[in-house]
Amino acid sequence: MDFSQPMATLLRLGTAQAHEKAEHSQGAGWLTRGELDRSEYVRFLMMLWHVYSALERALDRHAAHPVLAPTYNSTLLARAPSLAADIGFLLQAPGDSWQTHPLHADLVAHPPPAFAQYVARLDALAAADPAPLLAHAYVRYLGDLSGGQFIRRRLAKAYGLEDGRGLSFYEFAPLGGSGSATIGDMKKIKEWYRDGMNAGAGDDAAVKEAILCEASLAFELNNGLFDALRPPSSLSSAAAEQSTEEVSPDSDGISSKMVQHHDPHEAVYRQFSALSLIAALTVAHYFLVSRGVGAEICHIWGAGMLQPWLSS
Image (tube, rainbow, N blue to C red; front, side):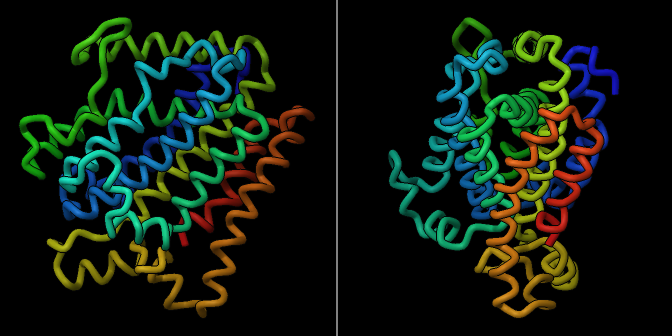
């Protein structure tokens, strides 16, 4: 990889395969086709709310960091408030009362491992080296500005939200303006964001390597959320059983495949060991970058080591 290229170019080229994998995951298909049960879609939004809350707390905390400052604009980009509003509308729960809803209480009590790992990774970066947070912001925000608009139309039809209420997560204001952004406005936001990433990373090859490496991990963590989705009840019994064995977590947040082949003590051990691995990755990340190890090695060691936990 030629690290003399701009950061935006490196991310586009370096994450192409990861992006394609995310698009073709089973859970992503259920989501984009509007096939998820309404309650499962709300559960997915709850997971996203926790992810965005962790990310945006970290970005607020490090808003002046030279790598992050050029793309920091919480008024324009922050998604956590919109997610909270959508969840409240879908559950008919005013204010923050949805946080005590049984669906959310169960998610917090029995978090899917991939979901817990995602939030833990963001918290770890906020406490250590914040520069790679740019990778997570890139994966999330540019995805929302691009494919998210296609998903919005599907969801509006699937869940009877044609009036737009319950879909504010997918809405943005124009850059420097108010109201709802058009497709052209969103293109301008993406161009501004790419320019900001290029400015933030500058000509620092080590920073670029770290961000590119983290972007691959960000896609893996995002895929983990899709894998944690429960199959739609509309599937046939045979298809639902097969899907459950492959990707669906049970009430303990552990995939049925794991429960079927491992005893409960091993399942719990794997969940907490995964969180320990996140911490180890953070420490190792410092050495990989500070000693100039290539992004390819970082990707293999980081995302590759984490993959068994995400696919369990």
